[in-house]
Image (cartoon, one colour):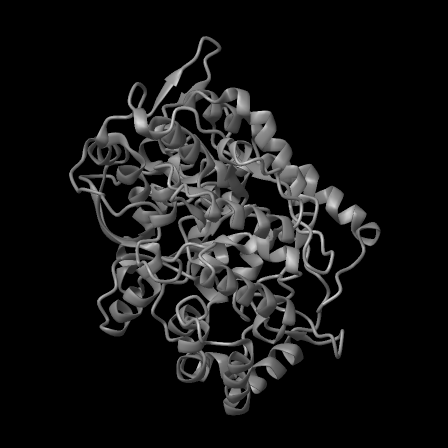
Length: 542
């Protein structure tokens, strides 16, 4: 697919950059930060009311009890009854029975839970943009929350009006509270600059040069993995490397008909990228555990231990500090977006600004008001606790009075992120747009001198955005009815085998996809195109 020329997108890219530069650390420090999101340097209600002190977030008598299930992006080491949990329960007058599931296992596990009718009071899910959750929502599994949003302004104001509109059904009813992310989230190509220097390898500027560098690393005799990936599935960790092939990791205009959009499986750019990565693995240039090891953190573990030279994605702050502990002379740098085989300038795959969120079980209606009081408290009087935690345990105060997060590795075990993330709910969009607070996190980690460099690299990735053209709120009726089964019958094994079956070819993949299309997949594509009237490239920033 030929992308629009940069000069035709200048205004939009300028808009991206004016806000995008504020979100570097949503990726860089994400899971290391005690609030697992961007945060601003000062406290406050962020648009909510603050005059409801005693009743804003706390139950009127005794702790408010509710059950809660959610995914975790870090290691599943949460232990109930920890010190942070006790302090939260005391401050908010709540008693939360939380169940956590590693994010890579979440969807499969929670579908079994839902099928058994054993859902908790509050549950994380994909929301109405996901056919599975939309179907449960339409069946009446969840509570309508419109009235509660009107009653608790801090919760309502935490989410932009445009996103609430996307969450509403045809009648304007809202059931889902979205977890917000900023649409520009680069997954950098990080590399060991010290190893590259030792082997005389210049920083790659193209896919071909990256491939040559990996070959040289393999031949060096260092017994080091040339390239691995960060804490997610391989192709998503590699999403920004994929842009160098023109892969948008989603729907894009058809080459045959620019007024029609088609899924990634029908795009040569995406298949070229995926099978290129397969070829790297065949040749020992990409981690042999990619697509095989069920532990999503295996790649970061290797890189931090000094056993990998390049990592796609990854939590930069923890990569840097943990690697330095094991290899004191190590240095990490970020490759600028690479030029692809056809001269395509890479950048970053832009995302819809919502990543999951949570529902209230319809059977827990009697708990809804108290739950919203709790959320409202967390965004008003409890905002500082939600964002920073406990002084001396998760943050310190500098001479200027600013709260400086204590790096995860320097905290007591009871206050590490693994004990905090499972008890997180929502943060307002306003907190995801603050560079000053992000800089404090760098300073807190002891790498404040690296901040300007990382920020500049973020700007380079953000300068060339690649969007998924499909409106995630548009759902094909056929997809909702039988899409998951169609995929399971015809594509799940093939699509999931690119990095495990070295005999799988692009031609075999296409043949399997044609069977999927013939069995109903084409109808799904046709319905999406019929229902989505606006097929222009989306803009989630301006």
